[in-house]
Length: 179
Image 1 (cartoon, one colour):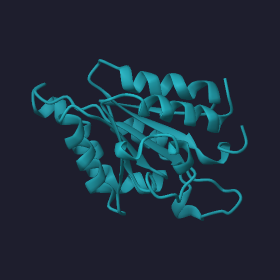
Image 2 (cartoon, one colour):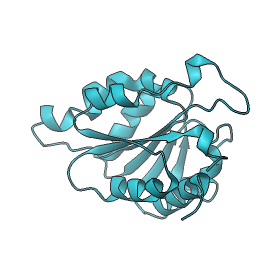
Image 3 (cartoon, one colour):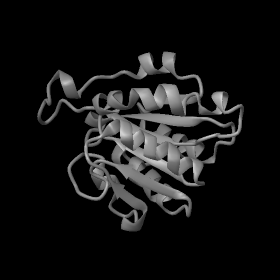
Image 4 (cartoon, one colour):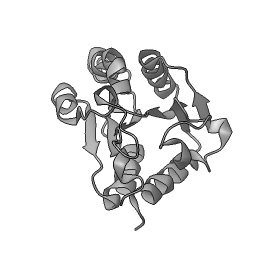
């Protein structure tokens, strides 16, 4: 087992090797976040760079999943993912239910609790909404990745799951360089 960052990198490389995955989000092609480097060996053809429109990104991710892709939808911080709450809670979380099982999307959502070091981005960029979203989401499993040994098995489970659920994985950005 490697460091926190190395396990994230290994997970993204493994997901990138799958023919049905696509990576979508901010700083997935262009550098700009701590998550960007974990995608360095994922083919550019598998990455879709998004502008800052989180709700639309989640909607596109749902659409990709309904078209037989498994999107890894990347929101560099929880505070950005909050802007996609409508699509996350009312659509991805409920689509199987309100389509009476006709549509069963599977999206892997990647987010992080913003780092405080080396530069504190202030309260609007370092919140942890994990517990609140666990209360709102019953068809999306929310997993907080606190230890390096959790990371690869959690991403592997998210990809391989057959229970009709999506997965939201919460990373801790301060651990990228610490653990």
